[in-house]
Length: 169
Image (cartoon, rainbow, N blue to C red; front, top):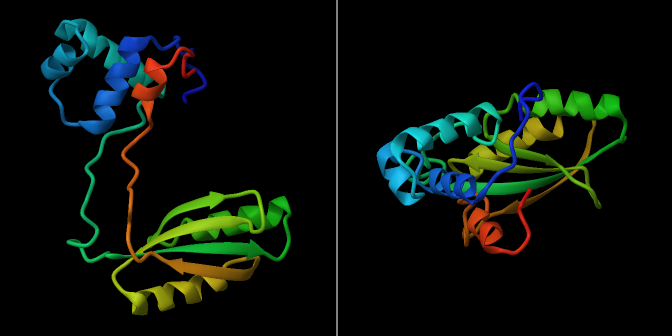
């Protein structure tokens, strides 16, 4: 969130706007306003405020990875040789340069990073793995190839929190 903008507390209408936009990013403002029981002008004002305060980071389309030739997914656990800020920084700088790495998470536990890769096939995986094992500080990797995607991230469970007795923020 933009640190220079003071965030206003979210109310149930803000939550409803965010929930709708994360599911239907192309919804027209008039339709969004109807869904959240506002007129168009206050609705667009709220959306602009939510964007300005950093609650909305951007808009995009969900692409079909198989149709676009990236039907193979794999997760790689990465263990670094040392856990120092210098090693973390060098690894981070290098891993973000590999376009096939869709996600990279520093984790707590038995290894240091979890990478998610999107690839066309196993031959491409082998090539990318060669790059990953040569990244600064990498001591060990373990790969898990996805056989079936059971659930895909479709956003935050905002409606669940809005319906609960305690506020989400």
